[in-house]
Image (cartoon, rainbow, N blue to C red; front, side, top):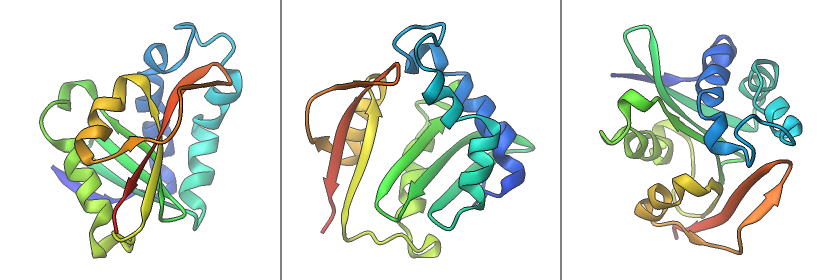
Length: 152
């Protein structure tokens, strides 16, 4: 597995990986009612995030295939964490999280991190030490649990 910083040319593969989870992420498996959310994870949107200084992406590749990625916004918000289904339950999500916290990627490991966890990912974030920071929210056709990790 090769890990590296994400670059704008990764946007299409990143958007495709996110899209592969659409039926699990949107309240209606067809995506109806989640158009705003879906636009926010399109290839164009991902390219804009990758070009912005506010976001830091780390991608994991197996050969030329995208196995997963993590994106941190403003050094304190876990914005995206996706692992291709064939690579799940092998520690890749944890490896990406640890890499994001490492000094190599300039994310402060001594702060409060937040994440808006999809309901299916709550156990993963709990395993990282995140705790619920409110009630489940239903916005733009998706449901998520705000969580935080006080890493001080």
